[in-house]
Length: 249
Image (cartoon, rainbow, N blue to C red; front, side):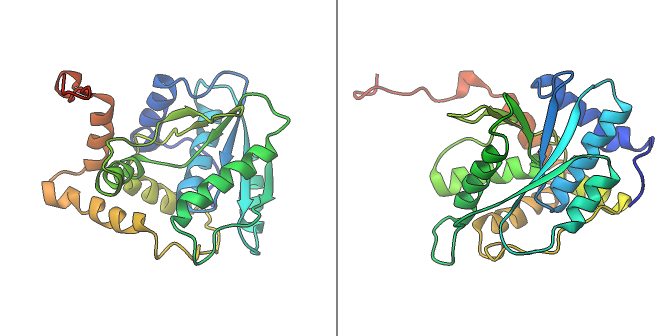
C-alpha cells in the first residue's frame, strides 16, 4: 500500500466532496475521536484512508480509531496491519448469535447486531462519532429499495443519533460515487478482508445495486447516484402531497 501522501488528484477525487459533507452536517468537531466502522470491504478501508488523509493534510483536527466487528472465525490481521500502516489504533469485537440461513432480512438484522456490538465497544466513551462507509450509490439504492419494497420515500441520513445511546453515525462519503471509491481503492492498493458473507449473494440489495449502477448508461449521465443525493437534499416541499385527515381534508 502506498503511504499517505499529498496527491493533487485527491482534491477532485474526494477532498472537496468529503469536506463539504463534513462541514454541511457538522460531522467532525475539533479535538474529538472519530471511530471508523471497519468491515474490511473496499468502502470502509477507503473511508479510513480518506479520513487519515484529511487528518494529516486538511484544516480538521481530530483523532481516529478503527473498530471491527468479527462475524465469523476469520483472520483479521490484514485489518490490524492496515491500521498500523496509517497509524490508527485498532480494536475488534465478536458478533454473537448472528443471522442464519433461515433468517428473514439477514442484512438488516446483521446491521442492527453489529451496531449493538459497536455500542458495547464504546460503552465508556461519551458522545461517540462512528463513521460508516456508505456512499452516494448506497443512498440511491436505499431510496429505490424503500420505494419498491416498502412503498416509502426515504433513505438513510448522513448524520443520525442512535436512539437510546450516545453513538452518532456519520457518513462522510455520502457525496462520493462508488466508482470513485473503487478507483481510489485500486490506486492506493488498499487491503481487503478475505471473507465473504454467506448472505451476500442472496440479499435483495445486490439486485438494486446492479440496476442502479446501470442507470448512468440508461439516462446518459455519469453521476446518477450523486443526482439522487442532491435531490434528497433539495426537496420541493410545495409539491409533496399533504397528509390528509380521515375525510380527506
